[in-house]
Amino acid sequence: MPIQIVRNDITKMKVDAIVNAANNSLLGGGGVDGAIHHAAGPKLLAECRTLGGCKTGDAKITGAYRLPCRYVIHTVGPVWHGGTFGERDLLTSCYKRSLEIAKDYGCETVAFPLISSGVFGYPKAEALRVAVDTVGEFLADNDMTVYIVIFDKRSFEIGEKLFNDIEEYIDDRYAAEREEPPEARSRRFNALPKAMSAHDAALPGLKPRAAPVMSAPFSLEDAVSRLDESFSEMLLRKIDEKGITDAECYKKANIDRKLFSKIRSDRRYKPSKPTAIAFAIALELPLGETREMLEKAGFALSHSNKFDIIIEYFIERGNYNIYEINEALFAFDQSLLGA
Ligand code: AR6
Image (tube, rainbow, N blue to C red; front, side, top):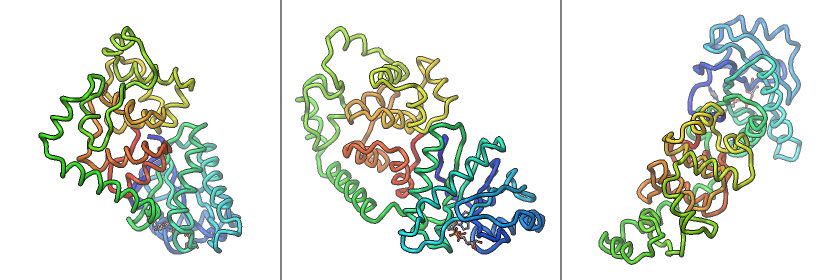
């Protein structure tokens, strides 16, 4: 998966390059800088001494010595002064410059800490937003796997309002499911129009619609021919209908090219559930079509797990930003979308 948010100690990451949140002197310090120098050994400091420091927003590369990666890219984030002193631009520049250097050195995997979000005081949720947006933009034009490494759970705050909102949404859905007696559900299902899928029917509060599983009007012939459509075929059809390229779709889905090729060339390919949902999100499918696509891969969206409810929360609000969805999934300890 091209962008992954992981909880780890960055000095343990076996990637081509890790990024260090350094200071202008590049001569070491506390936080992640201290941890990287400690794990790399004194030769790292010796090489850093030859670099002549680094400007805020810029980056420089060195060897990695005792670390399990090949390079360390040292970048200097801005000190937070309230947000009106160009902090966001400088932080964006840290990610861009580090990624450019990583690309110049042929790196295929790069791990970043949340730059500036410790000693330099950048609010963590905003620092994460900048990281995800900037890396996401870079990956739209480049093939690389980028890890955003979160050291502690507290570093990962998606914003109190969003968190509370999602929590409330989950509580409502769980509660609704528990309150409804099973016989009421099966009765309601029997009374539904034929076009409604079992998954739509199982969702309390969802009003029966005429043809919930198809967005556009379709002929009987179309319907019959689509009965046998596989996940891969539906995916390719939807890509065509949306008028986007394959690459636009898999990048937006945060899926790597190789996996996409596999899905495209194997009509019967069965993706994992997060992969299937990632494509539905990339294609900005409404809930009904998301369910249809999932069904083709043998899955459903249910109200008995948080992951599904969080996905539904975002789709209902028309928010198809996979990175934001992943941040929320991460905050609720759920697996992330993508390969
Ligand atoms: N792995 C991953 N992330 C880590 C680790 C680790 N081992 N240790 C800390 N973090 P900071 P800054 C997280 O303070 O804000 C240094 O003294 C930490 O939780 O390391 O850019 C430099 O020399 C936080 O979210 O860097 C500079 O003077 C994030 O890394 C100054 O601090 C960044 O925190 C740079 O401050």
